[in-house]
Amino acid sequence: LELEGDLRRALTRNEFVPFYQPIVDLEDHRVVGYEALLRWRHPERGLLSPGEFLSVAEDTGCSEAIDWQIFEQVARQARALVGDEGFISINVSGSHFRSPDLDQRLLDLLIEHKVPARSIRVEVTERALLENPAQVKRILENLRDHGVGIALDDFGTGYSSLSYLHQYPIETLKIDRSFVIELPAEDSEAHSTAVVRAIQALADSLRMQVIAEGIETESQMRALRRIGCRFGQGFLFAQPAPASKWLGSPLSLD
Ligand code: G
Ligand code: G
Ligand code: NA
Ligand code: MN
Image 1 (tube, rainbow, N blue to C red):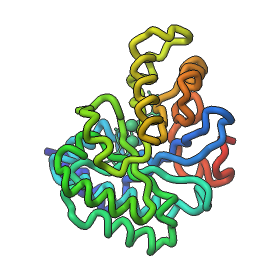
Image 2 (image 1 turned 30 degrees about the vertical axis):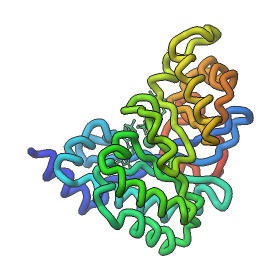
Image 3 (image 1 turned 120 degrees about the horizontal axis):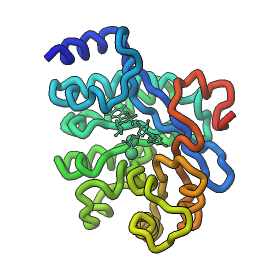
Image 4 (image 1 turned 45 degrees about the horizontal axis):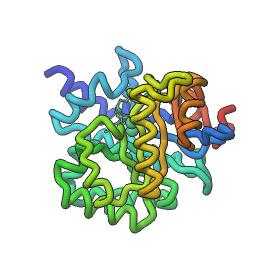
């Protein structure tokens, strides 16, 4: 496939970059952290999103190298972006958990760049948890023991057998934007409202934090606040943007 050659060339040319989307406290709109989101600065096709190339990257074994290109840049930019206060969330490809040294390499990278482990969160999907449970559990526990946060991404869309949740050191549930998109203004009986309410109740009882994804409207934000959801991200607050956009005013939307 042509795209595979393209991906390998892009890796050698460092064309993969993190964009950062603020994660805010829904009460006061304070920025508490950023999610690093992969983009490909393609020389001819412009800026590409993961949806356009990530599955080919996975199929051709490129996704781990892409992850590392992002992790390196995040490690270099983290302190300027969030100081001692905030955190940066990074996405890890599911297949990456087949690498038994993922945890140690990540911890070494943080030490090399003098980034405190508590400044970093790892986002993992439900599917990744279930593919290789014993190794994923060991890797996540080691990261957690060193202070790295663990968030479960796209929660509610996967293979949600709730029984596994407490078996992993998960501190944060990220509510998938497919539920947030459907949140109505006031109708508390609606299906999506019930799902989000249930996720929030589950998180509260397990003492986990909740972050809602894909908030685009004020009414979605108000519905989330009524449900007791404290944190979120989405176009209502800010689009993902290069680090330079946020460096002038770290942890602020201005
Ligand atoms: O930014 P966008 O909406 O196109 O992201 C699409 C998907 O790509 C999301 O599911 C997101 O979790 C995933 N993704 C974003 N950044 C990264 C990354 O750096 N590495 C990996 N493996 N996946 C990412
Ligand atoms: O898989 P994950 O949930 O990590 O991917 C998040 C993706 O959603 C990113 O690619 C990001 O660009 C995109 N995104 C972020 N905020 C919004 C939003 O408010 N609306 C929509 N439609 N997409 C968003
Ligand atoms: Na994510
Ligand atoms: Mn997500």
